[in-house]
Length: 174
Image (cartoon, rainbow, N blue to C red; front, side, top):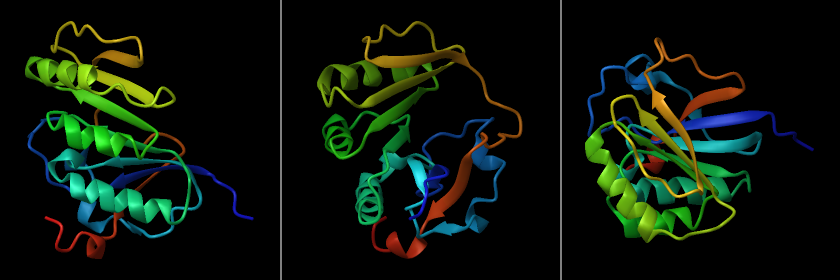
């Protein structure tokens, strides 16, 4: 029997609507990361990008591929919450979300999403707020990391593996 050993940070694609100076994706050689095809040995799987919600159909495809192999918790990392309906449908299929607010302009769409999505009470709700965003009146369900800054050279946390989603699974999707 295989034993789950760590967390998988799965890059779905590189595209992003932001151009953040401290973005970790600028430090990593994303096209040369290994492709993940075996999801069975992970305690949890974090879907990230780029910005995953630019192409929610890719998120849905990734969830389907992962669920064929494992029931490990899937957590979506995003900063784009404007498509409340689609994001709500995705969240109904996974175990958590981490939203990152980069600018004060991100507050209103986040609050609208928070009001819209009542969701699963067992879901993990995490909110990262960058320094300079300002006060965000969040509901108690969110675990908040406030006043965060970019981490120089973006070291991968201990116990995490960084890989990318199979490119052939993305063909015809974007």
